[in-house]
Length: 259
Image 1 (cartoon, helix red, strand yellow):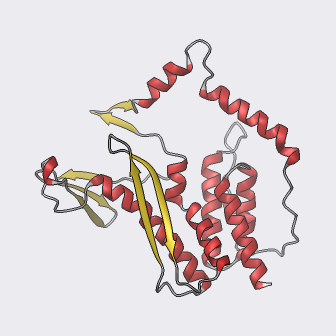
Image 2: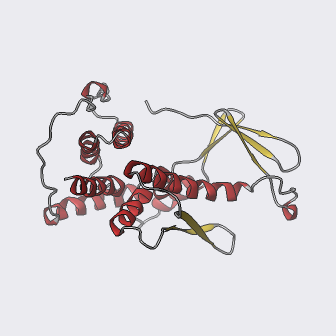
Image 3: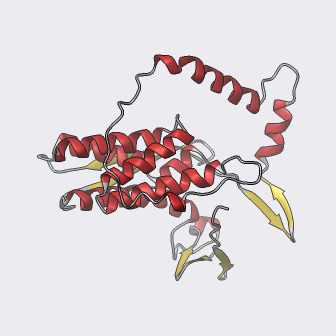
């Protein structure tokens, strides 16, 4: 079963709100025009900052792995909003020194695209609300269900079936990734793989997350062989996952430079 993280939110007077994240307190406040005092970042600004800092942390992980100095490197984030002030486009730009190698810039772009927070925006989680013990699902869910039930309208489930059929039909046109001869890796722990449930089917999302995370752990330890094994196992579960494909391409670059 997937792990659940709990964050406790409390009110601090006025428009101030505090989130207890592990051993840290994260405070927010509103602008004066919204009744606050601007004593802390606005919640929406904090959300956008989380995107940028997560991307920058991924860049820093890559620089540490490659033993490259972070001096002179920074990440700039720009966000476009619609007329209702809702974010519509987030652009991340990595600034590097003039003599920074091109292959490192390409690798950093792939690292940011595979960042967990960026991936969460590409595949947003379901948001539900419980009040007094009764769960109230996101207001978008009933509307989506109503629209999909209208005559002549293709439901989300039907679209997924169509997309799967198209992917299967086009599979023969895609070049296959060459198979590699690999040495056994001690980090590849098959005993820790999730087991099948009573119906004999994999809990796919849990297993996929575990394999991807173990691959990142091996990357930090510079055990590229084990990282590839974990990510290729993950790709078998989700062949169309762009982030996994980017991680494998990144490994290709690393192995070419270390050959």
